[in-house]
Length: 102
Length: 178
Image 1 (spheres, rainbow over the protein chains, first blue to last red):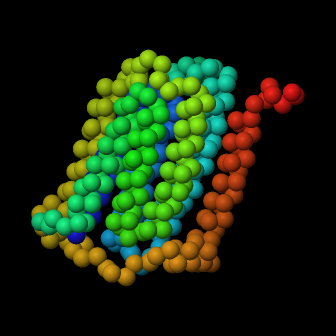
Image 2 (image 1 turned 60 degrees about the vertical axis):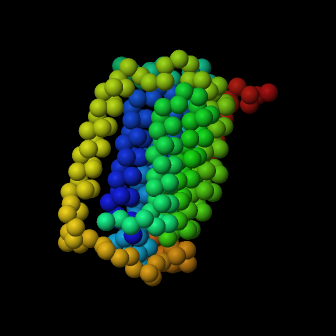
Image 3 (image 1 turned 90 degrees about the vertical axis):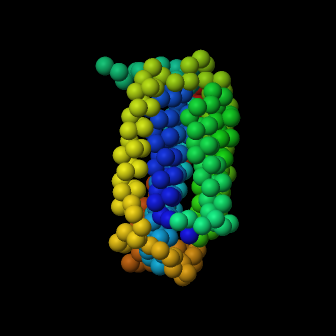
C-alpha cells in the first residue's frame, strides 16, 4: 500500500513547481498553465485525504469536483482577458502590461 | 517498508509523468510544447485518481482538463502568436523565485514527513477500507438537501457567469459595425 505522505509529497512538489512558474515566467499563457498545475496539486491532496481518512463521506470528491468547476471558469475568463490584452498591447508578456502601475 | 507491486510501480510512473510534465510546463520555451507537457501532467493526475479509487473524477479530469482547458490554452497560444515566447523565458527575479519555492517545499516536506517519521505513528492508516463511495454516492451528495446542493447551484451560476463574461471580454468590438 502506498502511504498517504507520498501522495502529499508529490502534490507539494507539483504545487511548488506551479508557484515557480507563476513567479518566474514572463508569458501570461505560461502563468495560466502554472496555475492549472497548482489547482491539480490541490485536487491530488483532496482526493488522497478523502481516500485515506474518510472514504464513506463524499466531501473530498465533491470538493475536487468544485475545484474542476472553478478551474474551468478561471481558464475561460483568464484567457479571454489575455486575448483582450493582446489586442490592445500586442503582447502577452506580463511586464509590458503596466497600465495600472502607479 | 513499501513492497514492490503493480500499485507502487504505477505510482512511480505516474509521479514521473506528473512532475516531469510540470517541470516541462515551467521551463519550455515553445508554448505549444508547454501545453503538451501540461496534458501529460494532467494525465498523470487522472492516473492518481484511478489509483485512489475515484474513477469518476479521473474521467472528469480527462474530459474537462485535457478535453477543454488544455485545448483552450492551445487556442490562446495560437491566437496570441506567442509560441516562441519572444526572447527571455524567465523574468529577472527568477532565481529569487527559485530560492523561495525551494524553501517553501522544504517547509511543506517537513510538515508532511515529520508526523509519520518512525513507523507506527498514532493515527497512521495501515490498511484502506474496501468500501468506497463511487459516482452514485457523489451524485447523491451533490444534490442532497443536507449535502452540497447549495454550493452546486452556486457553482452552476458561477460557471454561466464566467462563460458569458469570457464572451463579453473576448469579443472584438471593432468588428461589430462591419
